[in-house]
Image 1 (cartoon, rainbow, N blue to C red):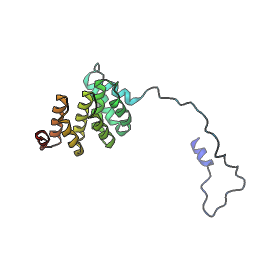
Image 2: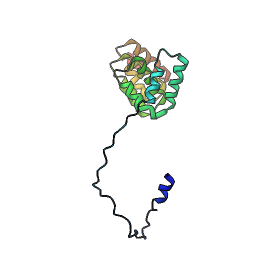
Image 3: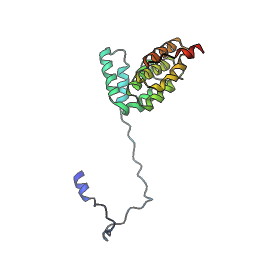
Amino acid sequence: RLLLALLLVPAPLRATEEPPRDLPEAASQTEEIPDLPVVQAPRDPVRELIGQAANPDIPEPIGQQHFDALVGMGRSALPTVAAVYRDRSSTDIENWVCARALGRIGGDGAFNTLLEGLKAQRIVTRLGAVSGLATMKDPRAVEPLERALFDQAMTVRASAADALAILGVRTSFKPLVE
């Protein structure tokens, strides 16, 4: 059918050619677009992978396979992963899985989402942000991670120190001394 449709489409006119005189008039530019129903997909494969990777009832190797499949989707998974990460109603485990996935997938969108996570109210979101930034190994993360050394939660402060060590930063004691 597609081949037949392509054969029926005329080739574009060259500048020197006149259009054939027997062509029908073009449809009006004011013709309305029909109001068609929008069908939502019954399932979101990215959300399903997040849920499976975060499911504590699944054996860890199987959960890891789901996580690897999520990361394997690459940047196409980022909008959903970022949305679940930002969602305050997500479980702590889902939040953690998403933070780690953002770090593994990488890119500016993931980096900026993790930077936002450093300012979140939830400790697990801030911990995930630190972990994701450490995984990315992006030098732009040094200053935000140094600020995280002063987080109100001791676990975030310790994780930030570990993340800076992973990034190879040996001068972060300066913000602590000042």
